[in-house]
Amino acid sequence: MRTIIHDIGDEAIRSLAVPDGDSVFIHADNKYAPCRGCFKCWLKNAGLCEMKDSLQHIAAVIGESDPLIIVSRCRYGGYGAPVKAVLDRAIGGSLPFFTWRGGQTHHISRYPRRGLLRVCFYGECTEFERETAREMVERNRLNLDYERAEVVFCENPEQLREGGL
Image (tube, rainbow, N blue to C red; front, side, top):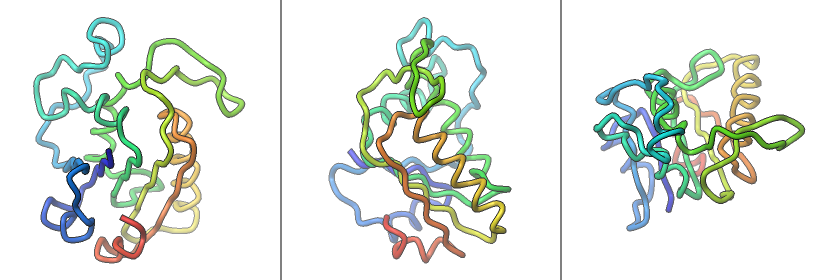
């Protein structure tokens, strides 16, 4: 299942991404509660967030996504706040136990390893911000247990079609 987490609006993403019956679009629109850090998705609810809103099942959605595509405005070398909030709610996709991956300690994934994490950043950013974003995406790849990651930078969302949605 291809999942696209984005902050550019439903109409805009559907005009850029070729829809198919196996795609899930998650609009990071801040119409959901932020993660409270209660860890019940880890310890009590097996990946299910106890907050009953549109992101209650986000850990499972991301855990079954291949590829996972993230479209976000580049903010200081990272995701925009709405996209970051969606990813924060997906902590239940990992277990509260550790493993050694990529020469570092990481949480064990609740889901099998997936193939591709693709992140498409748009907006102005410096070369330092681009390098910071690349490093962050690589860390996300390890944490989410994807085999590989691709990072694309565009000036505006309209150029994302060329970037590989």
